Image (cartoon, rainbow, N blue to C red; front, side):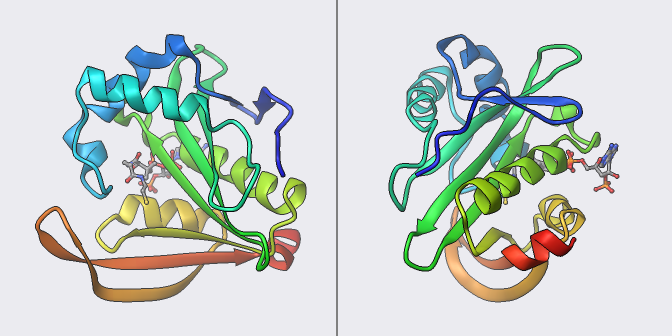
Length: 185
Ligand SMILES: CC(C)(COP(=O)(O)OP(=O)(O)OC[C@H]1O[C@@H](n2cnc3c(N)ncnc32)[C@H](O)[C@@H]1OP(=O)(O)O)[C@@H](O)C(=O)NCCC(=O)NCCS
């Protein structure tokens, strides 16, 4: 069970649950082809973003395995919603989790994804008590791989053409970090 004490703060960012007023800023990045390129979904129109906003708003705590914690990430300096960071509780028995992140390209290249994902790892390891957290990505998503490497995660697997996504076979790369590696980093 994890119900973070919102808002969470890092050096430059504030993390909190999504709110109804976030629709325009969520749609601003969900609608972009370059954002959806290596994700399982296609760019979303405003109505689709509205539906997903509802789901995100309902994902502010981890109550059971399988749940996703979804947090809006705001740049404290401007108040802009720059992206989101997600943490899934994958297994209670094995104390496993998964980290994910999506940022608006207008705010790429500043280290925001790395900074927010680090807070996601902290929540998973220190507050939820996870033993291992993975990051999974399309083999071509080099920007995402760099985020996981900056976080100190280990490249554990390269699965060749294990998924058929958007009409083509694609590779999946798996990064992971153990709690003891988090403590020692
Ligand atoms: C994956 C994604 C979040 C990475 O975004 P990003 O801007 O490259 O990552 P960060 O916010 O951590 O920024 C890191 C970059 O900023 C630079 N940077 C600038 N200031 C920095 C700082 N203070 N701290 C860290 N990095 C900094 C880094 O050098 C790095 O650039 P580089 O990778 O060219 O070396 C982004 O590409 C994205 O949203 N993609 C679409 C959704 C997606 O694919 N999500 C992942 C699914 S697996």
